Image (cartoon, rainbow, N blue to C red; front, top):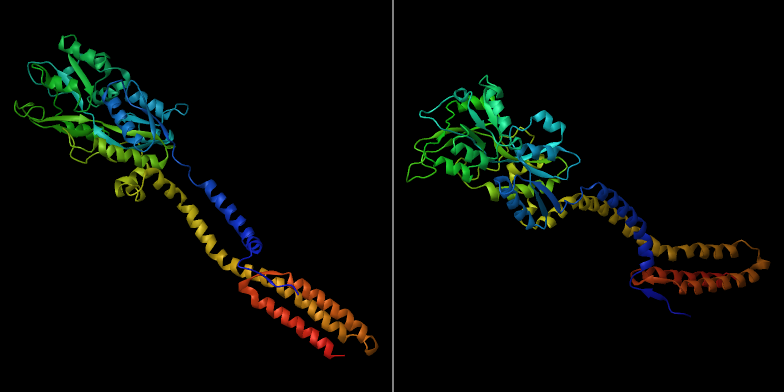
Length: 439
């Protein structure tokens, strides 16, 4: 008689038990993964401004910060805010994100174009420099004078048109020129231009030079609050006394200025994870105090007529995503995207685990239980014949029992189910003894 064959585990039965369920789970997970948001792009096209301008400088700082997270930022040059806006909203443009001055568009147009704001970054005051023996206090007093606004792309022309419009004036009331700021400044100092207007951050070298130039006056917007009510995208900021040079007391008094803000604008297709990453960079770059803003005043979700991205609003309320505070950007993003998959897997695996184990046990035991039908058939075969045929039938059924026992001895079964197999063998012997005793 051959020895019984035992194994620690039946890989075949486990595969047959687990296989269909595993395929089902994998198919469902694949379906979930298909709808999970893709990973962020590792290449970003950022539009700044003219070469060596403030916008260009800041764009390169963003590129440096994002490079720490293996994101390659290509900085593009432009004529200024208006061109930046055109590039960002152009569906055929490669530009993903860039600087746009507040007032460049309106909420309805921004929503129609699918634009989102990541927030305001810094004030860009409107600096109006002029020469006069006496101080002027009204824009109307510049009527008929030669005014330089810089190139169209800077956005200053549009700002100036909006400011003079609330004064019931038009472009035709002035002699307007559009020289580049350095060229326009030289023309102003040479007396070829009467009024020089620019919109720039406080660290502009031209602005700082003009503030310290004898004979050059800075226009004080005494009605700044009224302007901000009429033009909500503008803010009322104060140039504090002595901020340029405390020792020389420059300026000698506070000046009230109007200031749009530089805003970080993107198309709504920008990956939400990149929104958070850009804002973390913005806090490092623009979070310090300067002439016009307090510490940590920027970036801000205020001052923008373009709808603030939902991910940006979440950042302003709660700070960086929880996982990004402790993990690398890419690991945190992977887990943030995959939590739906993990949750789905857990929801499927828990109930299936309760089904698979009984199914495995049933498959193992079925190797044993299926022989009981044949044992019962052997017993019934002898009971259903008359006395004259019993010897012949007994001989046949005993051989049949031997064949059953031989096949049972070939069964490979895990040790955990050995009692089932030994029970079957004892029942075979029981039937054999019963047949012999019935003669």
